[in-house]
Image (cartoon, rainbow, N blue to C red; front, side):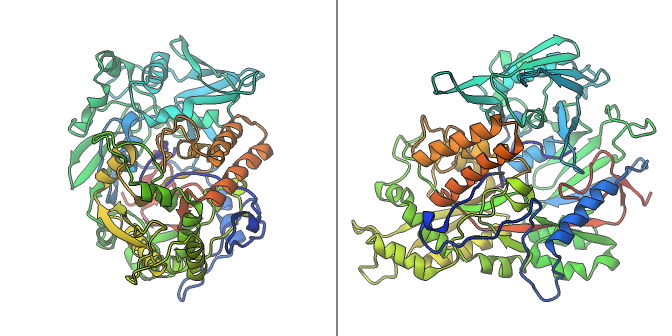
Length: 622
């Protein structure tokens, strides 16, 4: 079971890339050698840090998966975390942040789930399925032993309700809808959009009829299923958007998942309690999960997360590169192990607002004409890309435990990652030359360039508070921009405000943010397709604003329909190529996936995809 089955903000998303010759982008682009399907780039050697050969690291993680077997665990106890993430809502269908979705992923199940061991799709609320020869009709047989947290039986009516009354309800602004909008070419060669039909055949059978083949369909069916007996009346009266909001008693949020949220104290903690009637059992027929509680202490920043772990107050800590060397020396005395699992799936990037629309509140243009012109100029974006000092970010912020990022899809995704993209190496001289060629020079000697109309190249750059890594990355980016005569007025704002600006008011100039990622690039369609809400630089386009965006749209659609993996790879590689050539986002680095875990838990193993299934996790010190 993957905790966090949706694709969300906090920051980081799966994207895509392909073979691009250096000359296609101009500038100091550099070809890269072809990797194997399990390519993992080398971290920069840093004193005191072991450099693990990529083949050894991947091979070790794969062997862990192959050798793992679940043990029969003990009941009781808890696992405790510290986090900077406050929930912003208890309505999972409306969540736009990883904090909310992460907590709520304990509460809800989907028809399928993805294995933390193999990345294969496995049964969940659906115990089996079959499909027609053309891959368009899917029949799911549901488990008959599942109850909602309030004791109501789970049935096919809940699946029918989830898709037809929530996900396909245009009056409900759920970002999950994009995963179930099917795009295809009709007989006339025109792009069409359609939805699948979802029908409850009987109490425990659901039929889905797709308008076109969809390669990641089973993976997508991991989306959460909601209780019709509770939510149907709310949808009927048009109050879904205000239901289960952040002021709700979280114990009233009813799912089928292994835990319930029993307590939320703002700025302090979120507590989840074991669901004693959960459907999953271990090999001896014991009800899972084993743990009684999952507790998250909410802290102000990453430093506080580290302090809590060093004080023995938490059981797991996501280790930053800068923390690794000091923590490594404490493993024995602190009774924990730090696991290294290669580059992260997620992405962190700089992007510029290219939205020509109006502020929904003021009716005024979102951007001044000169800023819109700068940000829409690909040569400007290429100059900025050459000003980002990724090596310094790796060394100074991650202490060598990170990787420069050049492609939207992480190398951790294997052959979906395109390694042959241009690299906009840190090169202030090249950046200055590009800007000079545009005629944007410093005419008044104040250190800031002016455009051809005399407007100083100055804008607001934002990211969120609480994330010290992203904050420091922004400082390096700001310094790099200053070195090429561009002034970025850098500001850290509350996370909730950042999400509001990105998803509602669109009132921002430039931002540093990230998205979660995964092993299948299709998840990135909510970011890359021009019609989607999370197409950050210009969301919800009525039609593609540029030819390259139209082609990326096409590549994502074709990639989702193609059932031959090698052909899918070609489509996603091409999309990554277009992204690298046009630079709507400028990537920074991929952190090493580092996790420190107390040596008091059973059924754990570091793999390419996770450390454990929370349902099988148990304490060995009881």
